[in-house]
Length: 132
Ligand SMILES: [Zn+2]
Image (cartoon, rainbow, N blue to C red; front, side):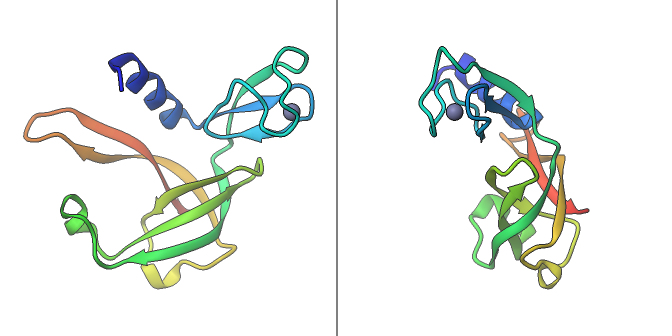
């Protein structure tokens, strides 16, 4: 992956930017240039929109056996979130006990540190979800 690509994708992740098809109204995340539903590129313009950050838990699993980098956080919850706009995304749910997470639970996105590259290195941020 090129540096430019990395930062462009990262900006998308920070801001929860999706695309909305000007032709059929389908919202897609991550953003796309061509609508996956009607395949219109030129007629219906793909408009960039900010997701509201609100959604609900569609499905989830509790991770007990975490990769080394996430050892301190385990157990933790990875969930598929159905956003208010209808798109699905996968993210960690934080600020609640694993046993409190349930399908249909209302959650909202928050920007958190997700990792860093060594002492004094680059810190990566991304969205995680907290109970709404
Ligand atoms: Zn479309």
